[in-house]
Image: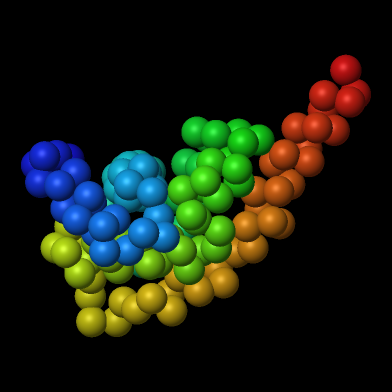
Amino acid sequence: MRDSKNFYETVEFICREDKRYSPDSYEFVMQALRLTQKKIKREGHLSGRELLEGIKDYSIDQFGPMVKTVLNHWGVRTTQDFGNIVFNMIEKGLLSKTDSDSRDDFRDVYDFDAVFGSILRDSIKNMDSL
C-alpha cells in the first residue's frame, strides 16, 4: 500500500463510524484487489463481480476450510458486505469508482453457504475417507 499509515488510520476511522466489519476485512479486500488485478493483468478499475470472484478465490486460498468462519468473524456474511466495505473505502478516498459502479453490483453475486460451506464439507469428507 502506497501510504500504509494513512490507509490504516483511515480504516480505523471507518471502523469507528461503521462497526459492522473488522479492520482486517478492509486490508483483506485491498490484498484481494491487487492480486485480482495481477491475475487478470489489469491495473486500475475492476467491476464488482470481478473483484468478488477474486475475493472468493483469495479467501479459499488463504483460509481453506476455515474461510466462512474467518469471514463471519470479520462481520462478512454476504457479497453485499464486501460491497459495503468497498464503498466505505470509496467514500473515504481509499478507492475510486466509475459513474456506473454501485453497491448493487455486489448484491447476491454468490451464496456464501454454497461457495464457502462446500469447502468445509469437502474437507470433512476427505478426512472421513482417510
